[in-house]
Length: 155
Image (cartoon, rainbow, N blue to C red; front, side, top):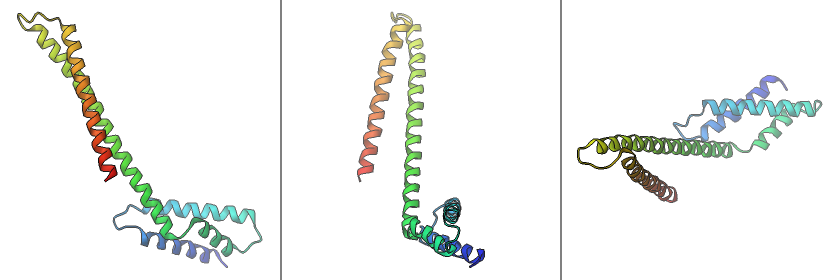
């Protein structure tokens, strides 16, 4: 038993995992992390049982990790969760930008209305009215986006 045999077993396991991953799946970093994890777990087993057969210890580590199909499925789930998080971040950013624009437009509209001749409304009253309408529009839009997202997730 040599280090070359151990490296070959780990390499074969990593290749088997990469074969069952979907095409176009970004795997380089994940496979490197998997290999690091295998090597660390193997080193821990060797430290725990220095007199044991190293091939058996490596096989035990690989059995604990699971079949390559199980590993690939976990990678897929992780990728889906990351995509969902990115979509949530984009939605949140869009709502924040919309909120800020509503506030700016409320101030501009208030100023415009208060400077009209014969308007008879002060800037502050106009601002309060426009802010109420802006906030109402923002809450309705946020509700619609969340409702649409829940429908998409259920489908």
